[in-house]
Image 1 (cartoon, rainbow, N blue to C red):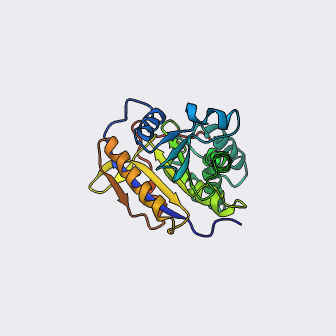
Image 2 (cartoon, rainbow, N blue to C red):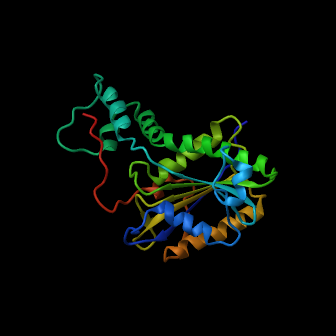
Image 3 (tube, one colour):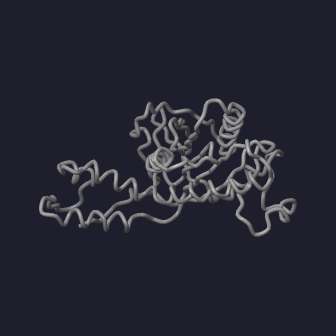
Length: 266
């Protein structure tokens, strides 16, 4: 059975420049600075884990089993190949010069299906990571006798501009709502993106964070996640801000530091 209810909080911290260090090592240092964190790579777990599947951390005095995943695998080639097949059909528009893809697709009857295809291609890595992380978290819960402990997946993207925060959020929502079992060992997903920014109130820009969770009843987890997310903003020199999205994905439109990534489907 898939997940019936899924809650998505959109947050961001203000940033004017890109961090000098990559996201993953900064995230690891942030987690390991908390005295309640236990690394599952540590010597204390070497014998119990051996060479078996495992997650990365125990967080919050074993309140969460956490697995970190960095999103990689540029989807540009796959997107372009799919679009080339569609634009080779007789009803496709003829394009001269450089035109936005949404402008090209707006006159097509199957534009919604094309847009969904692009998002699905961009989200392929997300679905793969969720499946693997669910297995890793479940293995640790069983091995350490933690059946009621929550599971957290931290998805990070600081290098793939075409896999933006909206595509990641949509992929997570779609996966939890359609995959049989709904990834039972994952209770929270934290997405941290630094491959682009989003618009904040008062014409500011910031790096987006998503917190996706299944239940309002796991209050201890939600309180821990709130403290951790706020701490992440502080660690990055800014206050974390909650952004009202009301299910509108447009508020997640990416703002790039440099050139906007482009597709060449013709």
